Image (cartoon, rainbow, N blue to C red):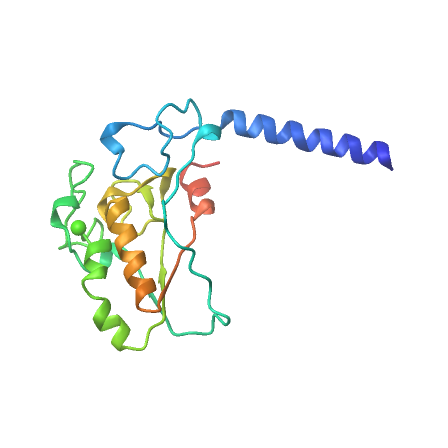
Length: 189
Ligand SMILES: [Ca+2]
């Protein structure tokens, strides 16, 4: 039995080593400083990445999550910062007259409309899709390409922090998931 456990642990360790040695992500660069979650400027690989929100107090979850939720796709909500609508500079990236491209909604637009949402009695906002950089036309956030870089269309790290702090100051919560499975689908892995 002990031999079996040792062999299993060895195989598991080898699997993780092989997996993480293949892991890649965009390196830190000054061009992406406003969106890069990795703050280690000299990192040579994802295993050396790290990031933090200095002096940010932890907000505990509610005792009971049975609270009124408001689910939204950020791109389709409110465009509070038109300057980020063509963040990637690609053709047909942003066109609010169609449902095929980006509308332009972002963290700032949501922040500017929290009064209305709160007046509905909403206590938590569930963000559909991921916050990470997506395929240019993937306005729904279900095509994440890199889990270390925020989607510039949705706002900067600072704007996201302002939104989260405003939600918490109102006694509200933000809920989202990374959509890891969607990256696997989009990359055919
Ligand atoms: Ca925008």
